[in-house]
Figure: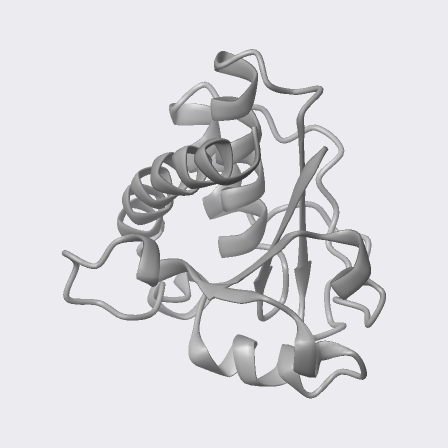
Length: 154
């Protein structure tokens, strides 16, 4: 079983969107028994809450379910539970690295999956309001990540 954890700031916009999009792509490929996906935030403001309305709107528009997706905070034991920890921006990565056990974790930055893009961080739509842009980036990056996981692990 391969596992991936997406991490953003509050776990209500970017990382739950990526969680839902990747789960959808995994299901379409018939790999739901092979790959586990979760998301978490570096902050604790939204623990237990569902995705932001802008995230829900984009997922609904694209026929992607998000049932059971609830915000949680990243924990040190996530480094043992997940093969891939994918951070949405450098600040998230820095905060994850500060957790005990995080020094040795294999971290990826989401935009490294899309080297052709000028942006090097996934913009936070909580502040920008541009959920469409974030959805397009996440959709493209999740396709690349899924192929990477299949190639490396399945």
